Length: 219
Image (cartoon, rainbow, N blue to C red; front, side, top):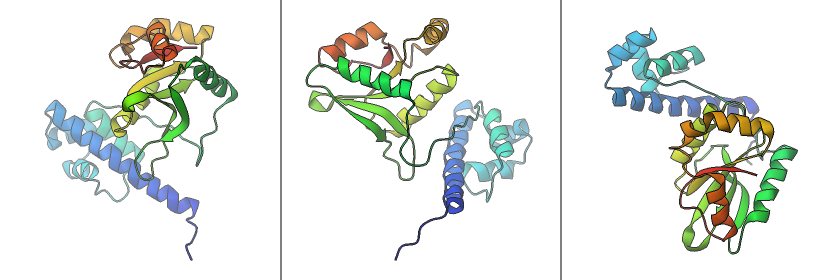
């Protein structure tokens, strides 16, 4: 008979998984900048052996302080967000936003909500995925209220990296005065990641086609 895993045990597994992901990202960033382990360790204020264990995911229990220092030393900023365990419950505004999107989709487009990433143990999910003909698809991240737009873009970028089935990515944003002000200030900084504007995306969706690229859609 299978035993139910305790929250403490699941928490330990989460810590190991997160440390592994961060360690690999630190190693990739260090190599991309041309830093040796010794040079990066000096920048982080840690020993080269500590940095090496972080990169090789061999540190028995890396502290948050250690991970953040190693990340900064290689040009990264460590960010974090907590997610509900199990099915993600969207707030009312986000649910209404996704419902408005559904109403704009032309035939033969169809959607599915809460599409998890194909990574064992990963709790992250796209808020929706739009399916079209010929295997075309778009993954949707819905934001009812924009806070840290840079953090949102980084979160989407990591999910895109880890999901081979992502297709194009649509950042779906609630059309409020606050969100319009935030986007007006930062839109061009996100152009490379989200090239298309809402009018172009909406024309494709209402015509029953997946947009040719990702973008930001205010609804």
